[in-house]
Amino acid sequence: MGLNLSNAQIAEELGRNPNAAQRMTEQLRTGIVERQPEPVLSGEVECDEVYVIAGQDIRARSKEKDAGVGDD
Image 1 (cartoon, one colour):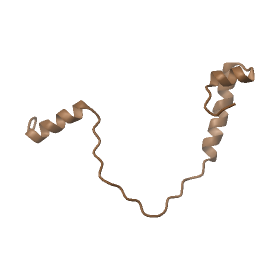
Image 2 (spheres, helix red, strand yellow):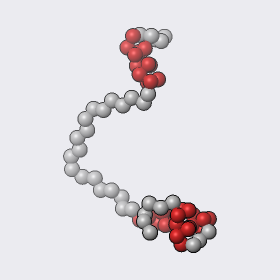
Image 3 (cartoon, one colour):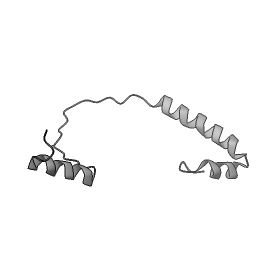
């Protein structure tokens, strides 16, 4: 059984009720998350400038601001 299976696939493979498989996978996934060690960061990190555009609305507002439109 692989790690990337849906609850329905797990239920079918184990011959269990889908609700029982859901409860089992919730317990397993919760346990995995709880046992994850906190990441230890060290050393030097370099970050470059990044300009992220979420969509047309952001670009339109940026152009309006540059043009002085909508300034109160």
